[in-house]
Length: 559
Image 1 (cartoon, helix red, strand yellow):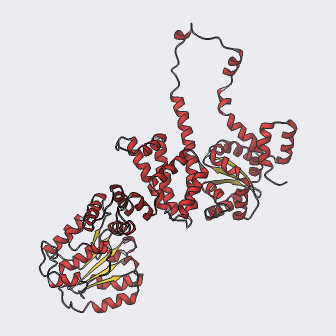
Image 2 (image 1 turned 180 degrees about the horizontal axis):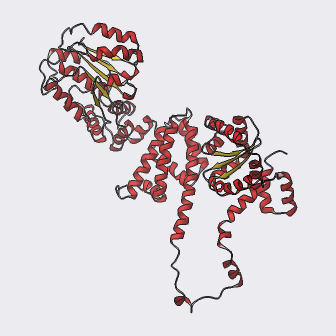
Image 3 (image 1 turned 45 degrees about the horizontal axis):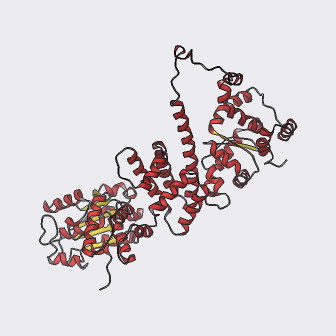
């Protein structure tokens, strides 16, 4: 006899063998026991959760000659014919391949024929959401008033695609994802009967990868059983599922913490080229950090040393940032074809976000840990004499110290900002904004993927015919895009079909200077400043600090 896959071999033959859907199976059994059958049912829920199995068991039970407690006896002639797929009164239809009006009309023509050997003729229409609008309309009247011996069972994974007029004519049962506990119980039953040797962590990995779908879990177990000669291990399941090993996951997080951009890029490309599923890797990272949050909250206490090393190096706040960021990344991965490039850019961006947050936390901790100031009475006899240099230092205004970085940035970039705002118009910025979203199309472009990844979250805030002011959420992103200025300029030239001069600034910096320039624009105080002339003046003053930075900005452009 030909080999039968495990999920078909162990398809439940009675309601008692259906795992994880106790409420639904109990309701269906009571319907049969109390003879309260409806003419149409809708079974909806995720794939592999028992919809089709329950539909078949229900069809068999209502036609059983000797039902026991609402379940089929599996011994009568009707049950035997059903188990051998030889019962002509139970008709299964795949709506994915039979979704036209003609197929539904054929059903309408045949429903008037009485059952040949059973009490009820049952139509099980799988993936019913795939029917066309015309097919749904053709089915509507028949579904509402079928002959008393006809029952329809519609199964779907996407009930939102089914017209409300169809749903309203059915009794609806929503199947839920199978719980890990129920799934483990079912898998252990199969493992025992098939005499499969498998480690506990490998079994847990099967459950995680199946995402609540029993059929997926049994199929993965079947695949692993065929793949392994002796014992099924965690590495075997990770290899088959397209996921990475725990060791590889730890190494990836270490690279994120230690800001190893090159290592991350190489690893993502290696994972992709070896057939790993990028979405599964992202999900595994989310689950890993989720366990770390539980560890920080003392909900989970026993963790591996390697895991603990990562958890201890991440603050709780950074863990929340990682979970939120990777959850958004999962959504993005569903949109783009080259997932490896999207994932690579997202992880690089994550490093910058974590680094900025860590610096902020460090500053806050330093502020909170300032020693208590003692009173004059406590210290008047112990005050050391100030040196002249210390005295001068203490007299520097606090405002000047805090704004030092802000002043430097403004000196370097204010000339270009001035010139762009002098000629900026609403039409120019509206034109730029309309085309800006096309940056996403270049996330899979080998030449521009890094620039596109950085600029994906950027925002043009002002534009003229010759220049654009672009804000980014983090200073670190501003620094990174300025290091690849030429590449970003070429990218925007291709998107905007114009060779603009660019100036990158942080959103915080823009919020500071915007009201200043708005006032100057209103009062018509802005005047054009020649960039090259300004550069020559800096050279003549030999201001090396500003010359190096300002010169780099100006000389990026051709005069």
